[in-house]
Image: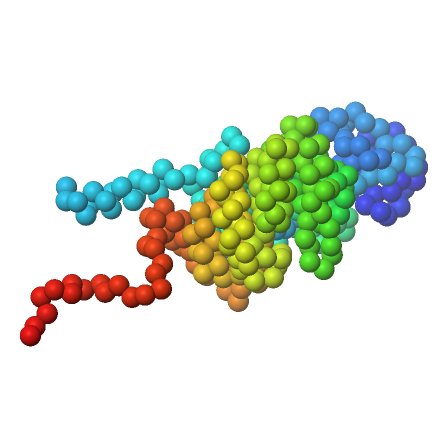
Length: 66
Length: 272
């Protein structure tokens, strides 16, 4: 499947969950927040929500700021 | 106990009882600091600790997908030690700011947000119309909203009416270090607002912070003043003291200003 993460295209195997995507990216779910097609994926749903072809993800975290 | 030591005790009690209350939280420190523009995470934490701040702001940004470049701020800044206040920095529309606020809340630490909706890239002044709209929406969704605004009274009153938990007028433009440009406006705002007034942006050095607290405001938020100082940790300590000094000076009730001299020593008992 072709998906986009943080503005960059990548491939991802069909049948994977959002949690699987985070694992592949080496991201700790407790340290990030995920938006899928402009909708927030709640932490409790990460395992249940399936990644679909054409999905656009934004994965964000807290950084230094004023 | 003598009169002098009773009074000293009274001041100490006033200071320990003089807490900053915003919405359902209480803070001993009236200084809130940002975490941006430091040279390292370690310096960030050292400066924040030296400032005595209990609440710190953070921004919400994309994760770097290159794993080798990743070192999360939260690995250094412990959310159990500091109360993290996500901001909506970099947002130019109400929709954008609302989106970022929701993302910040989803991190699961709180529903508090420092709401910024910027109207101009050069001055980083707030778009007050969009700010009001975003405040209304987010208050409606249960957020505790702390909006960064200008020192216009009407905007401040509208933000309070919209349910903002505090109002945060700028002293001068973000990152400018110009200090408190309009103390009169800040005093007017303080006299008319019921929610806490936190001066946010533009403070440059300790005297700015002290002068700002002497206006009777409830707190100060600063970032660049510390991060861009030659010695941020040292400046953080200075700001901690300046905020306390300014607050105590205001509580003490300053002497009146006169244009003519009044002697400090007795005029009687002079020699022939």
